[in-house]
Length: 348
Image 1 (cartoon, rainbow, N blue to C red):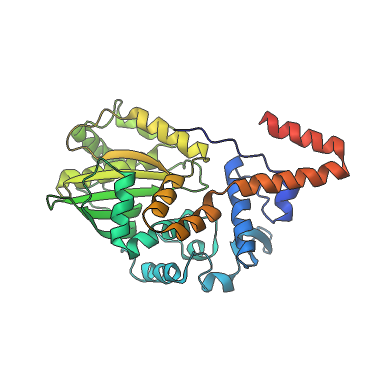
Image 2: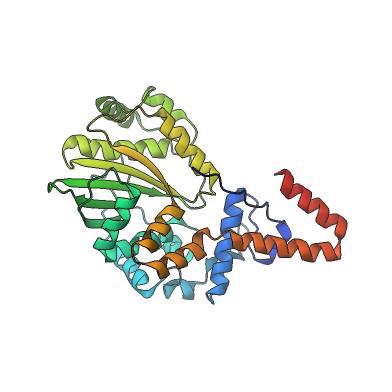
């Protein structure tokens, strides 16, 4: 995979001017938050607010106001805003959907999932073309459905005996008529999360599934205890369990994230290193960059939507220009301070 140029360490004063200063943000998350604030402002939306521990509220550039959220502002077209409402109304029983985050938080991966896969749900022929590009090994004759926040069997003991679900599920028919399954996990600004260790009965079931498919080079406990691997392991094994149960003739687990989010890219590489060469009957793991999906969508016949996705989620050249402008302004006011900031960026 080509190495992305590093994103800048954004000066705190620049983040504060855009109401984007959050001390706990990673380097990528700070850049992604500022990019979302820039998109929000360019789209004509005002910044929303979040509660403070003191009982008040403070502005946050990556949030929409409630009025703009209610009007569907977090989605890239009216059709996608309506689709979001439909998905909320008809969500799978037990699905964990954070409605306020979906509609008001521009930084969340939940609206990204709708903005990215919503056009594919609305046009299944387009979906088949895009998915063939992303997973050329899969025999995708035609896509039959796309679901959001979905599990093939939430909590069922014969699967993984837990409530794990995928952000997006794509089902399809192969050229021989058999059914195929793709479960996708979408990350945007998130770091690899720290899911809890599974309960003993769930761990035993995960171990059974992993051994039945001969997925890993190491014991399942080693994978689950590795930093940032639990969610990937549990979702991969959910796809594998559905395959073993006979729900599908083939299955894939797909992880999607921006190329510049190196924490997720690194986690994907570490997870892939745990896997044995795939045997027949194994669910395959694939990491695909968000940029690749956007490009595939543009080449498949949705160039305008691809441009809108890139502008909102992956055009970090905007951040470079904001930082360059900030440094230029700072250098006029205080040359020594500007050189210090430049040196700090270079050293990181």
